[in-house]
Length: 554
Image (cartoon, rainbow, N blue to C red; front, top):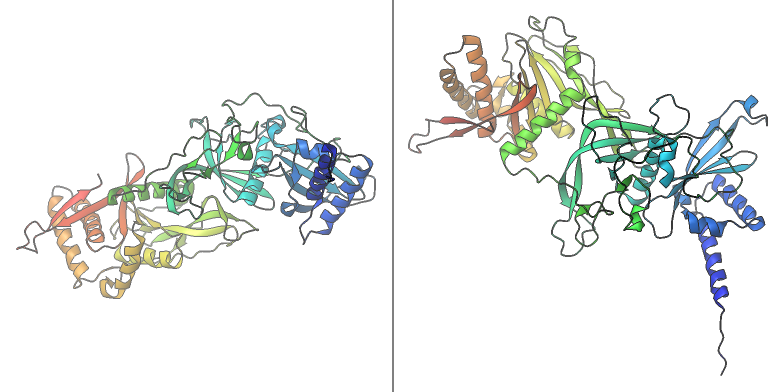
């Protein structure tokens, strides 16, 4: 009996051929530029074999995620008569890894040249913050790699463990050793937005069986955003080469230098996602427990429990209104209104989120900041804010209007219904501001969306012009609460007494009638909004008309 046998070298040769086929395999809809690149690589590999070494050292190109752009240049600097070339960028991923190791830049004109950017050598590009720089810095390199990792594997939350990266903290603010960011990707740049904290959302679809804490991770986005632009070399620096090189540690093409990170990189105990020499890591749920954690250190992400009480919900809403007001610089626009204390007409302006839309997924939108529109003028008792904006770069999120000295400082019943209507048509509307002639500022927020949606249906029953209908249930309840608080504040001057009674009565009926709306007032001592929550009770069931009012959430 004869047995056929293969030598060890035969298996190795077959494996090498399979690896090369994988290296060169293009998607079915590959663009002509990719086909030309692959043919160029095949020819060069045939004459001077290098693919085997490249795969072992760097990995495989993910051609399906290649990015393309045309680049114009000055002909006199090139001398070859061409006026533009094509630039192609391809992420390089090692076998079975879940992180991008390198970026392969490819320049196509009469010839094809290559430049390899090694992710682990990001610090060699330096941390130059000059906005007019003509070469990439470490932020640009890391931002581009993070963008690809988001595009390829879906999750876009990262922990930054090298605090030299994205070091753009406000003057005087403490610089954290590490922090979390959300990455969004466009065709021209990558936005990196600081995350203040996390809370849980719905059940994670990929939840392991039996896991107890398997929920979507929802980041709380803050106002600090970095924008990293992807730069290309100019072709004259000697960095472009005919064959993609392999990288020896410390020999990257970066032009800058960097000191050791101020915080250590995570240990490389999970190489499929961690890589080595990296100051950032993509945050993912643990495949066994479903708990979100840094996969390299095993440290769980600090998740804030969902608020359980109305006060916690109201206090969080107040903090969000603080962020909107401050980040949009609404106070600066408000200060442009002359003689606010004596102005007889209501003024107002819209407040927008500045956004960038992912061209690969239009539903994926990155918030890059906040801004205000121009001041508009209404009547002596109302104003209709007009929103004028480019939907590709902005979206309305709230508004601010003024109340003159003849009105109450806090929101009217009409203001309540306007917020509810705006929220129903655009869920981004979560609140609104009022700045009064006496200097007070109030905000209203939607703190229970289900109740708010239901309460909107009461408009025809409860609203009379700008106030509650006097003969409606809520109108009568408001009047009773107003009288009670008017007595409570009897030692104040008449104007202050009425203003305080009005805002407390409004807070009382907003709670009593399950509006889903919370009223807030800015504390002049701290410059922050605080919720006004008033609970109405009937101590004696036999005397239903006798009510007591208790302020909560103090």
